[in-house]
Length: 522
Image (cartoon, rainbow, N blue to C red; front, top):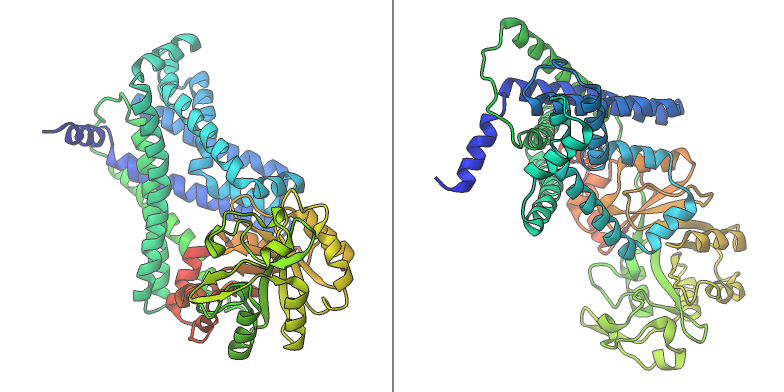
């Protein structure tokens, strides 16, 4: 028998399956009840800061039960306050991984300061690796202190417990670090994989009842996964679980929990199905193209897309050159489109206009923004204009727009830099101005702009609701398949950006799509 087989046998020998299902249904019922309570309190403006104590109490409960299972004891047996408190801190530090939904809900409705979020979003590719590295180090320290609570329950002092835990969890540093990374990534990847699998299975749903059953099954599988990782952590250095038979009262309690669990989810998902399909959003061509019908951000593609598809808006990108000319281009570096490793903000207009851009079998040159704007106005085509700023152009790019104020009438503006977006609104108060959100993991900073444009892959129903509650429109970028458009059609978007405008032609109001939408956004 190989080592892996022995590990699996040993792990399952430490689990009481009655306890596993008791906690799966019991803790999941409490967690979901609290989550829905907090969501409704936010939606109806009833949230109070002390409600956070309920979340902390839930983490305390997880920590206490983890401590009992780890020690192989019954609930409240040999209770130790130091051990319980240590387990609480342990699970509080793990909670961003296991209770991400709660943190996301809180950040959506009570966002971090706008300047903080704007800074995080602008420099996300530099900051994110640092955050991951810090949390990876934290997980390593948690793994070394995994057994501290167990030794505290045995009457050891805190320094002794820490020393013993570090001794018994000592392994090769590299292997242990990689194992921790694998553990965290496995939890995230398997969670996402289950969600995507159930979205695929929605195509077999034939009615509302079938949809509700599938959604409850999805939640149950996810909850079992969380509890599997819970027991996996608790099984380290643990003896074989007691296999004593449970009495009728124990099975009766479990049955009541299962009934309450199913009832809670049935009620919640029934209400979700009662929400009608949202009105059709405006159609926005992403970078002025549809189904690769031209070179992105080119005047030729603008004319072709306008003539063939008549979109409500055409989204395009504006940058500033080194000599302060506004040009229509998305990439800061032209290596992909022109084969030249040069930056727009470091190159003059006289140099840029000599370059030939190529994409999808089409070729063209970089256009001046004023020429693109003139062409759009001649076509009566409204634009969604994104100002892409860099450290070199942030203080000067807006000056180039001021002479074009009359030509900008009826168009819309947006930027991924919140300060720039606010300046745009101050300079052009009559225009609709929005903030472009690169991802929805930390919510959206509070602002007084007209709309928020959310990235599609991380878009959440909670952020949509919170943004709508602030009387702002909600756009999403970019939706590029018929199936994705069908799923998104049940959310109250005001505008959808796409690379293929033909995806809106098919019927979307089906029970399969509604089930998938609830699963995706709930």
